[in-house]
Length: 431
Image (cartoon, rainbow, N blue to C red; front, side, top):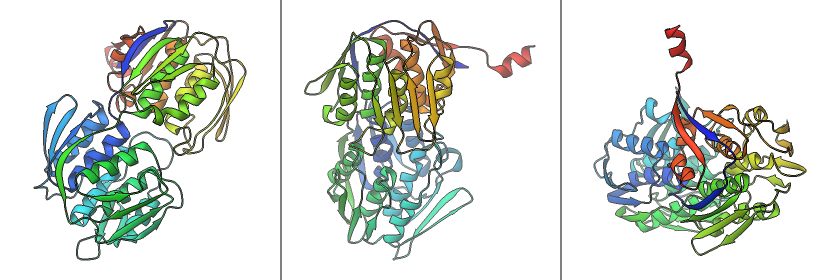
């Protein structure tokens, strides 16, 4: 069993380079299915979700060539297979973007229901509503999303009003609409930076998408998309994770290759907590030397505080002075990490979507588990701030979304390393 072992108490000093955005990459790579020609995609993060989505494209018949560590060439010109295998597709939440891409390009798609982290139900009703408005029939059966166009194999433009602000549905409908016949309008659209990035990618390949980043997006379907080169934006959540890691452990770190505007909601909360944040052109300097102050957090769609940062900042607030309140406004199952923090001495009470955190003098190292991707990052942050040794298992969750986390933290002074320990099955067999 592979774990992270963290000896807490070291302040962090130095520089961390942020990788490409996970949430953009796992939509932009499927979007390459729609392109007639070679897409060169740059600034791709080296994470397991990206590896998996590239493998799925290869299974479908795409020619995927690695140019360098962060760049791939993808040619989907000769793809004929439109069914994604259950084995691969069910492992990743972003598998549903393959529905929009395949439906837009070929008029038919068969894709497993999404997997990934267990954050409660992942309804796809808004995705289905969007595809139905563009003339598709969508059924969920035997664990698959089965979608077919009813208009001569091509989607037609339509009006879509999303009942809730859904990032996944917004991006999926954009994908299908990029090659639809006519104009599609998405109202009550999500505004996250990776939605804008997907629109920019598609537009660079010949699509006509306007309004991404606002609550109304208009897509005029193109006849075809051509090849080209595109670089993915920096990862807002990775940057935020390292910002709050500095807040937890103390020290001073320059976090490079970021878009500071994307971090405004995180920066505002850190300033409220007594952490210094200095914005530069493509970097933020984060410094914490004094005690942490309490804060109240409510997660909301962008530009609000991101749900993907909730558990990480929750770990920091465990040692802040006073009582902090977190209200989760997006996912139902975001508080599973709380039991792990309690093992380290945190004082947290959860009632439905609200967590009340009473700041304690310090956390103490303990064996903990990464319940999901962001909860795993929270365990690492807690371990950096704790007294003693923390071991984090189930780290495969963390590796879904963070490139070289151990190396990046060690380079700024964290005492963190990967260790191998016998799993329970091996010990049973030996005994």
